[in-house]
Length: 214
Image (tube, rainbow, N blue to C red; front, side, top):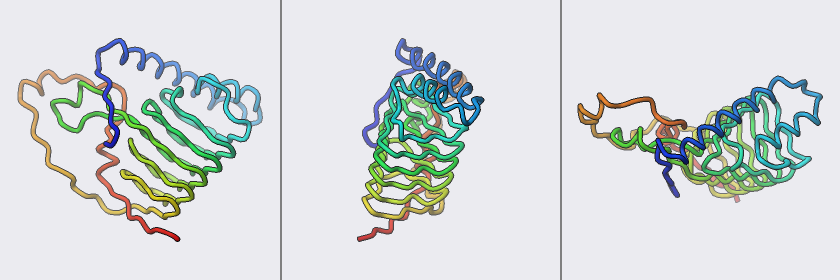
């Protein structure tokens, strides 16, 4: 994961993160129950989720899911279709005139891939989506990725590396990246449930096929 940072579990910082996640889960549940035409209340709840007022030109269709909220920012005329999930602790920056299709996941958080470290840290790295990008339905963007201006991410793609400007990216087959060492028996016996965040190894198990435009 490029630009990776680590949040140790079992610390005051990780507990504050977990508390914020619980709050935002309640807010997004409330958002998704509102009548679609209740625009004023929807914008009020979105401002609570993201910690500040959102642009008037931002469109988010419910249901929408987010885990942290405070580290996401939006440009003008951004459209986010139904069923999207933003895990934004590492930072999500979305430029102007970005189109995000239904069921898209932007995940900035995960865990170390080594078994003996996986339960001790939440890893995170920022996602940047530049102006005029279109992300197709059910695509996943993994931590540390920048998608260059004007590019298109095909439906179902898993993007685990940067996309240059004015390119089309589509999914390819699963690629084995590395072999992991088994955890020592003593460590396995002491494992408990991991901290919050989905493993970025799911995203990095696929690679993008990049077809560049002019």
